[in-house]
Amino acid sequence: MAHTLLLFFVFLLGVLYRVVVSLYWWKALPELYLLDGKPLIQNPDGYYFARVAEAISEGTLSEYDPYRSFPEGMPYTKTLYVYILGYLAKLTNLPLIYIDLFLTPVLASAFVFPMYLFFSRLGLKKVGLLASLFVSISPVCRKNSSGHAGYGQRQPAVFVAKRLRLLVRLS
Image 1 (tube, one colour):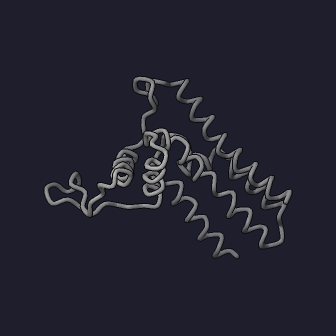
Image 2: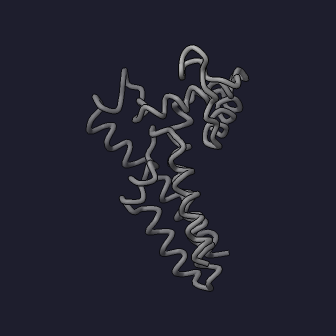
Image 3: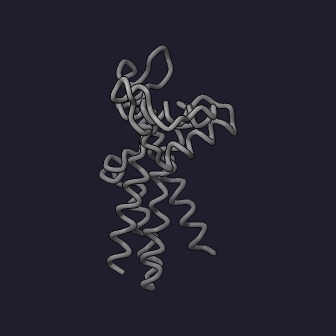
């Protein structure tokens, strides 16, 4: 029970760390991160995924994306991330950008759970907690997982999935 509470605390610490770092940079360089006081998505893919999530939330997602490979279009790239984002927007009626601000850090911080489970399976629960803490606050993991607010795309999920495959192979 104590390990579960500590692991949840480590997860929350990772989310908080990512959000605080983002807020720091937004305040330090508002001309790069804000437009009219609202956060900007920090990569070109983020706008594509936001558009797909918006179509999902509105129920207007078709088979082909008319803005890619004009005039015939290309099939949409549908990822778990855009479905989560789209359905959360539909359920909460909040703008996508604000949901994305917190969804990305939550997904990126979720890697603490498989990290702990991997070491726990080896009988090293305390090592699992320390490894999870390192992953949650490591600047390298924060940067490589794209896990900072406003960086909406599928990278956090891809980061976790790749590390899960590696952990499964190692065990």
